[in-house]
Length: 462
Ligand code: GDG
Image 1: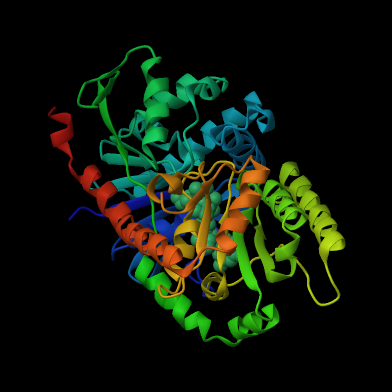
Image 2 (image 1 turned 90 degrees about the horizontal axis):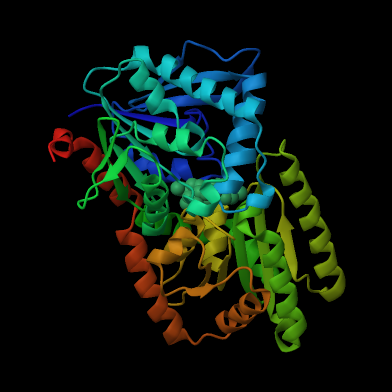
C-alpha cells in the first residue's frame, strides 16, 4: 500500500489532549489517518522567517511534519489572500472581498515554500492529498520541482459561481494550478459544476464526455466526495455526555423549556446576525412561545486579527443585548451567547438536549455541525434540524427543515414549526436523516477520495 501524505494549512498538535479545535477539516480527515500516514503543514506558530526545514514528531503511529510561518507571510498569505480574498469570494460575498497583488505574490511564495519543505520527505510511491483553499498552488510547485507522484486536492469550501470567480485577478492562474492535481474533489455537485464551467473558459483546456480534463498535456478528474463525521462514535459521545454533570446542570437550568442550539466558528459566513434577527422576529411574532424556549449560541472566535471578524463580534454583542434587553424576564433569558470555545463533549451533550438545531450559514462548503446534531439525537425523542439551503449539507439532508437564511421571516417560521412538531414527524425525519449521516460519513469520504487517487494510471489511460 502506498503511503498517504496529507497536506493542510494547519496541522493539529498531536499533544492537544482536549480533542480537535473548532474547525471541520480535522474532524473529517481523521478517518484517513491510518498508521504510517504523514501529515504536513503549518504548525500554527509564527517565527521571524518561514522555516525551510520541517519539524517531525511521531505520535500514535503517525508522523506530523510542520513548518512555522514568518510574520510577514502570516499576514499576507494567511490573513490576507487566503482569508481576506479567497474565503469571502468563494463564499460568494464579493463585497467583503479585497484583493492586493502583493499579498497574492506572497501566497504563491508560501505555497512554493510548502512544496520545497515537503519535497525531501517524499517517497516515490507516496499518494499526496492536499486540502483546501490556502494551498491551491502547492501541487503546481511540486510539479515544478519534478514530483510525479499522484496528487489529489479537496476543496472544503464552496467553489463560487463563475461570474464571481472571474472577479479574482489571478483566476486563470489558480485554475491552471488546480490542474496540476490528478484528482480534484468538491463537497457537492454544484461546486464541481461551478468549477467545470469556469474551466471551460480557460484557453487550452478540454473536458471529455467522460469528465476527463486535459490541459497542457496533463490529465485530471473532478469528483464529488462530500465530507462527513463518524456518526456512531459521535452518538456514543453524546450518550455519555448526557450523563455528564454539566449536561444535567444545563437541563436543570432550562426549567422545562425547549433548548435551541447553534454551534459555529465566529465567522460571517455562518449567518449569525441574521440568525439572531430571525430569533428576535420569532419572539416578537410568537408571544405565546416566548417563555417556552431558550436559545444557546456557542461561537468560538477565529481569525481574530482580521478586522471583519472583530466587527462581527461587536455586532453580535450588540444584538444579544438588544434581544435580552427587550424580551428577558426576571426568571428567563431568551438568548445565551457564549463567544468562546466549549469542549467537544459538552457540545455533544447540548446537542442531545436541544429540541432544535439551528444551522443557518449564508454559504457553507458542507457544515459538519448539522451532521453532528443529527447523530447526537435520541432516536425515540429526537430534535429538529433547521438547515440553510446554502450549506453543502443540505444536498444530502432533505428531511431537515430547509430554509433560506436571508429570509428572516422564513427562519422565524421554521423555528415555530420545529418547536411544535409532533413526535411521529420528528421521529420520521430523524430516522431518514440519521441513515444519511451514517452513510455520508467521514470514513466514506476518505475511502471514496483515496480510492480515486489510487486509481493511478487507469485515469491517464483513458
Ligand atoms: C470547513 C468548511 C466544512 C465548533 N465550535 C466548537 C467546536 N466546533 C466544531 C464543530 C464542528 C467543527 O468545529 C466545525 O465544522 P463545520 O463543518 O461546521 O465548519 P468549518 O470550521 O467552517 O469547516 C465547512 C468543513 O470545513 C469540513 O470540510 O464542512 O463547510 O467551512 O466539528 O463541532 N468544537 C469544539 N468547541 C467549539 O466551541 N470543541
